[in-house]
Length: 143
Image 1 (cartoon, rainbow, N blue to C red):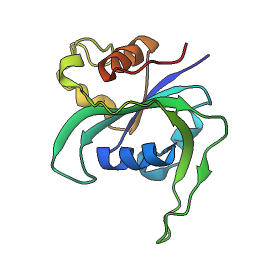
Image 2: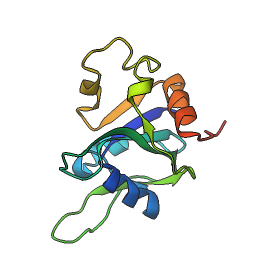
Image 3: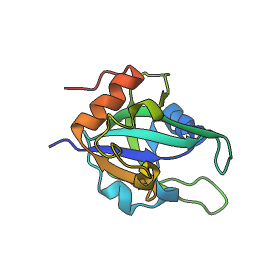
């Protein structure tokens, strides 16, 4: 059964992952990525445009499907070896601001502190919520 996830990262980091066909979450930890399986859908929420930046973005910035395989470590240099998963990103170049979607998404509707849901860097959501995000991004999710 396909599951649906939101990863949290700056748009700058998401763009790199989209360009190279991978995802990372939680500062490169492997445990969260082991919860995700091939065929699962993943979207990225970017609170900011740049890592450690004060430039608020608050938008969904990527959406795709996890490719076959398991999490693996990648040498980024300087002793940093984050875990990654390969993702087939959907060809979407449209960001979707979260503000207009807050009352449409089950995990944020009626919640004043909706951003709290993103605090751990990876969040499982319903298929219905993923479809709302996909429509906002003008993306076609696989059947």
